[in-house]
Structures are given as C-alpha cells and as structure tokens.
Image (tube, rainbow, N blue to C red; front, side, top):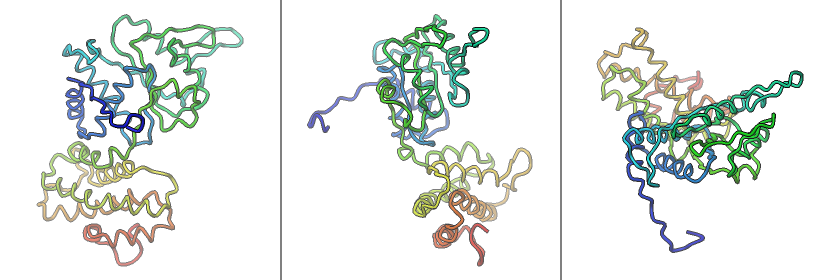
Length: 348
C-alpha cells in the first residue's frame, strides 16, 4: 500500500488447499488460529517461487508445526488426486530433518582423507544424493533445523542459485531436481551474509501472532487425565485465562530474567509442571480424581498456584522474588486459589 496506494491486491483462490490445511490442523489436535494458517499459506506460496526458504523467528512461534501441517495437507490432497492452483496435481511430501550445528563440516558435506584421498559423504550430501536418484515426482524437503553460522550456510549458496548445484570438496557437483526444496528453520539470520539471504524466501514467524492460549486449549484434552469431568477442565482453563496474561505482563515488567524466555515457553512449563503434579493415572500415582468436584477443585487450585509461581516466576532473578510475591498476593484469582502462607514469599 505504501508503494501502490489505492491498489487492491486480489486474493488467490487456494481451492482445496485451505480446506486441507484446516483439516490437518484439527486432526493434529491443534487450534484453528488465523495467524497460524496465514503462515502455512505463506510458506506454500514461497515454496512455489523459491528453491530455498527460511522460517525465521523465536522459539515457540510454531515454525516446525507450520511446515508439518503444510506437508500433511499437500500429501492429503495428493492422495485425493486434487489439482493445485497452478494446474498441476499435488504430490506427496517427504522431509529429511537434520541439525547442521551438531556435526562438523566434514560430517555435514563430506570429507576427503588427506592421507588416503578417500572421500566420505556427509549427511547433507548423502540425503541430497539419495533424493536426486529417486525417479518419482514426490516432493522432497531437506530441513536444516538449527542455528545459522557463516561456515555451513555459505556452502549452500550454489544450491540456492538458479543452478541448484551442490558443490563438494572433492570437486563433485550434484545437480538437484525441481521436486526438491531446502527449508531452514532458524531463530535469526544474524550470521547469514546478504549473498545468502538474497537467495532465500523468508517467512517470519512471530510468537505473538500465535500467543500462549492455543497451546493451553490443545493441552487440556491431550495431556490431562481422561477421568476429569468437563466441569473440572473448564475450571482449569478458567484459571489459565484469568492469571497467565497478567502473570506474564508482571513478569516482563520486572526485567529480571537471567535467561531470556518467550511467553509460550513459560506457559508450556506451567502446563508440564501442573500435569506432573497430577501424577499418572494409569500407574496409580495420581490424585484421587474420583472425588466430588467440591473436594477436588480446591486441591487443583493449590497445585495450579504452585505451578504458576515456579513456571511463570521461575526464570526471574532472586532479587525480584519479593516483587513477584506482591503481585501473586494482590492478584484477585491467585490470592484466592493460592492460600499463601502469612510469612516468607510465595516461592517458599
């Protein structure tokens, strides 16, 4: 709109793709969040015009789920024989995921023994060589899930060019196929050169677009004991909705974190800690969940309060404990469910 004021860009009709994306999201037990669906569509459109694509954004934004949903949606449409908006049939999608930072350059691209002159293929070169040898039309995505540095990413420049050529240290060149794609899942591009970034299609994933609430709504039916009634589940969800947003705001205002976190990370910790305190029903180590609701809910309230303190406030510096204690004691919901002791802090 800044470059072309007054011009309305028509929306592309994605046909059955959008329907398949929503179907896959539901089948995975995830939530239908418009911002998340938009990122899936953006990734699809970027793959249509770029050989290499990078999903960039902080942890907790749903980067992995984005490409997994798109992969399953395209595979689902392929099984039904649906034609893409470009007029070509959808094809099944296969992924090979690796972390380029957990291995050496030789283990990634291949290594030439200086004594015997014997060549040993690396992980990435082996995967690409195998995908090139396949004769089918299936899509193959090689996913580099790990931090970017100036060493290994620069070796991908010839791959990301129009030539799509992987050049190895032994002088061999592997011509990649149009059915293949390179996907990079990274937190940032600080170490990537302009030469590399200019060859990539970039999809930025902001955790704020997803938020923490969808994770909680997916966690409730997935991880809580099946014997919990719908009324108890609704009560637990109400505790999250009435406390987490305020707690995150108060925690961020302290600015006392020793290790930087994101909102969904703290919420995930809260869910995991609360689940662990409930115990495992199948192993007989859980609470007596057959209690009437009027007796069970006060116990769950206290477990939630304990989990809240150590999940939301667990990453702050000890010097800020007193301030977080004041917040918990003054919060309308937490002060009721926590039943905090008269002395010490809520962490005691």
